[in-house]
Length: 636
Image (cartoon, rainbow, N blue to C red; front, side):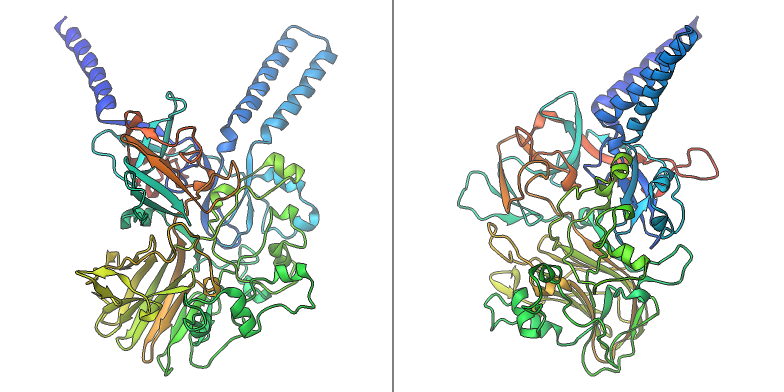
């Protein structure tokens, strides 16, 4: 009797503790949609590009939306009806009619399955379902590396949400949806009570609510948040190939590499404070000056296709510049040049308007596979493209009704990562990022390890240090002062420069933040130099090599939702006491505070902070339900 009583008491206490723990400490949630991708994954597919080998995710939430569920329910209902007719001995004609209705319902339910997505690295359209194979013409089938395999769709990340602690800006927060309190949402908290939040040029600004005359200041993310939110623009280790086992890259068919040697005088003819008080030169002026505008005899349509012509010839070479390996992945310089030598990135993205079945004269990937490239590649501006949002359903694939789901505006906050191999500690290297035609540099002396930051080679100021002291060249110490390999990350995000060496952020002797490039109510416009937005320079005597080059972009917040209305330059959102503003990291596909009837979440609706991804989804392994260890992490 006492044993039974102890058992009952233990069970009651365990349940009580569980409910208390859930109510006051932590709770588990499943991410239903892709509004926080790629920080948190909703239902998705894991995809490996057969051309470049890059691994990425494509959203599959459409497979579980209301229409998809209704279609599957219709299939279940008809299956039950057919079984009932068969058991009752219904006339064959009646059973056959129901069977046809069932076949149609299954086809309609299958139409919601995601069957394709676009690689963020090389922009090749990857098929993820074998049913697409029969829909392709034989001429297209011959171009594919292999028949597509059936890739599974995984449920969203499972996370732990903590209910302890104060809510802070940039936290990922779970809350009750203000328009439907029984529904939980998860977004990033970006706006605090008693301020006016502004979204402009992909960044966030704020001023005090009670002072309309106060200037808007940019909101800067801590470095761990930035690192968690960076998205890959191009990873140079993953070279696009023409076949899965082929050594032939697209470079052999006329496509230019994204990293290539650049003229030493590039900076002088895209930046001239004499010709333009702002310093940077508008793109059209540079074209006219350097003969890069199409001829007036060319039709207007042809001019539009050539509006972003290359800033220097693809065939540019110099005897004393960077040398590359055959696949343009590793670059070296022997230090023999008497002037700086430069590598620069140009955003050469093959045009691929849809999966290859829809490819036509505008599909440059199809042209490359057929070895019939019709026109020279043109560098583009880096935009806010996100592979997660490129999903194509089977229904769209069948009908050919593919369209660009979201607009992707210019993204100007960039980060450059690389491995630097120093053969001899002499000379210096320069990492450079371009934003709005301005040049942001980190120069590292290879003998002393001293890093020096500058804007437009010292012509522009950083924020003041001390009592009005003007800051042009913040300096900091790095461990780079001996032969060896070093991993560098240079960031220009939220109007602040940061340098990370071997995982440790370099501390500088003065602020590395800088004033707004344009007033907070004016748009930042790209200039000529933004078509070559990243560079690596080496001074005389520097014997170095660089590889594992990765270019990232920051999350680019949209001022308006793509669901409603045209794009706008900026929007302001006032927040009263106890009101918080929420945005999804996947800003192009997030139903968040920008479009709610009330653009805020009251404090009493906040549930907790997302803490940890404890179960992303299983992966193939030696045991069933092998955990996806790499995705298990604290949420930044």
